[in-house]
Image 1 (tube, helix red, strand yellow):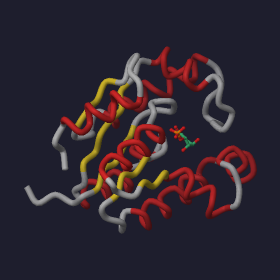
Image 2 (cartoon, rainbow, N blue to C red; image 1 turned 30 degrees about the horizontal axis):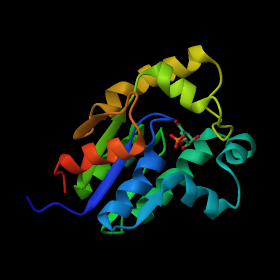
Image 3 (cartoon, rainbow, N blue to C red; image 1 turned 135 degrees about the horizontal axis):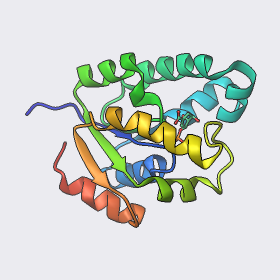
Length: 168
Ligand code: S3P
């Protein structure tokens, strides 16, 4: 298969996209791009500030614009945001390009625990809304080409599982 050397890590907040992505890129000797970091650098503001000052719809526009730019890179490992693969134009763009999409799957309670110590997540509020949002997104995440279970696993173990997929 003549596949582009692009790996897209997707999944909910706390699934380890950024940590696993950086490690995976190092193992492969490929550049790593974290979509949220690109957005923050472009705006000179944190994700939380962007949400608070300009609202989620504006954040989604920034996210789509940043994604459109970074997909030009190859080879690359890209960590998407938790909501990126839920927006139709983003899903279409990623599928068109033909890189490998990998869902880092993790149960709700572990995700919640992992997020509880981080304060740059405007969509992380109470338990109920967290779980509700996760459930809304599962059908989108399931469209990923590969799924890797991350429950109780260290980032290094997840990286090894991804390398074994022979997805690229
Ligand atoms: C979001 C997840 C965040 C960030 C923004 C919106 C979401 O990324 O893009 O807060 O919609 O789930 P992480 O998944 O890296 O936390």
